[in-house]
Image 1 (cartoon, rainbow, N blue to C red):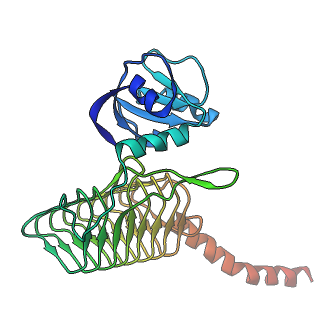
Image 2 (image 1 turned 180 degrees about the vertical axis):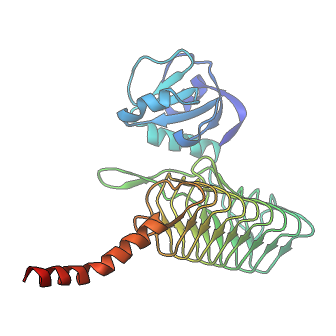
Image 3 (image 1 turned 30 degrees about the horizontal axis):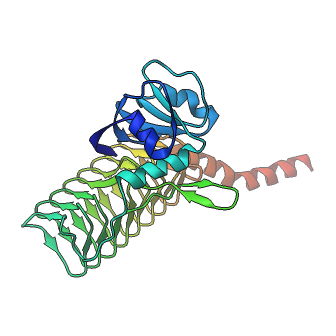
Length: 313
């Protein structure tokens, strides 16, 4: 999330009651989780095994739960609970704004776009030329919809990320301040759900087609000209290349990379990265030719065991 005003580490520390370690005048231009950080961003870390990764990241200001030495190009802000402090900053800079009408006055809809009855368009939604939003669709705040996009009935876009920190007596939600971006010529089927990023963007690439009842998790990036069939679920922060085909009921784990031109056959479970221009099947998904070779061998096994017993007897 980009911040529209110039802030310093000192000002951030005052908001969250933290202690600045380093340059208090370090300027901050955005707030991001570690997977999305860019130069000028503030991020947080609360697990020691990730300290090194965060200190080497593009972030210039880091909320951290340990007083320690810091690189010359970083400023640390010490707080006991960086996760909650991060949420406090999100509430401060991106407060929840309830919607009190079907189409927000801040929504921008191209005159050629078609918006059917009972569509909800949240604050700062944009809808491009010749796009069609079918009846009973909900599009939450800050979603960007390109030109010639079709979104079918019952779909909900821009829901919060499914992201929680386990506490002794509860699960604390990580607040979402990211967006969903649907690029030109995409089509989203009926009853799909697309979560916005925690701090960055969930992106559906140009010309990509989603079937009915597809779920896309927070921060997922789907490339151009992809096909995603019904009941596919894609967990958060997975990156999918161009021209990928995911057939019905494929499940994809979080933080994976599926390269260009991959095809995953129906009901597969993807739990590791997939190389470009290959076909995959199974759970866990492996190259399809390998899976079918193993399956043929397995079918031969009872006969071969029977023959072996006959020879032994």
